[in-house]
Amino acid sequence: MVRIRLLAALFASASVILALATSRPAQARIAREDGTAAILAATRTPTPLPSPDDLLAMIRNKFRSHRPPPPYEVYTLIRKQNTNYGYPDYANSYTYHIWYRSYDHAALERKVTELGDEGYLEFMRPMFNQDTDPGPPTADVFEPAPAHPLPANFIPTPEASMPPTIAVIHVRGEFDYRVTSVQREGNEIHLTLQPRRDPERNRLRQLWVDAKTLELKKLVATDKLFVQHGPVYPVLFTVNFSMLEGIPIITTIHGVVYGGYGGDGQIVDYWFKHVSFPRTLPAWYFNPHDYAQHINDAPE
Image (cartoon, rainbow, N blue to C red; front, side):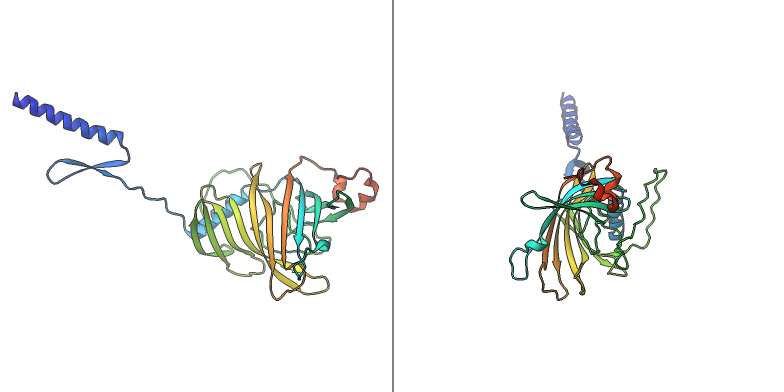
């Protein structure tokens, strides 16, 4: 009778231990020196980040995976700045409706007043680091700046379409930047960058990306302010992003001019609003020689 009770007790203990081990997968069972079993909570080891160079390459590849951009983009650009006395600079604060073709950066622009009046049809090539407004919303922020200011008749080389993926080979080559800091900030990863060479062209300085998807959330980059018949001053842009139809787009830019500049517009802000990707746009939008013939059917 005693033996039967002893065996029953042993089976009951084993059942309890087995139930604990199977019902609590986050725990581990170990053996003590006295032969009894103990349950210890397993510690979860956080997944380590890749090396800084690999992380930067992954972020760049994630951004480039959405390219080339849509063939056409329509958006509203709002620019605001103050005079050097701190008052609103109405002459250099404006709103434009823009119809953009991505493969050659050609754009039809039309100025809009606060009263809703529309200006003349204007041809432009929105680009960063040029004597024009920055843009478009889908600009390739990892692209190096041009070595020299581009002439007005410059036509960029279209971006190549991404070929189908056959195999993935991990190769780390020399990148344009050295990562000097990687910090986890809530749901984002913050990288500080230093150009390995040619800081005038490699203009990224900081990146913030989603910690899970590595999609760009914000960056800090250099740019240039071209003063008419005067010097060129350095600008520091803080650029914010969001996603539209699965594509990262620029939503706002906050610019600060430095390098001794003290004129109007030392601080400038841009907003990219009402962004859309139409399937097609009329060809004449991108040929300024045709504008005079289409005044009556010009877009609003």
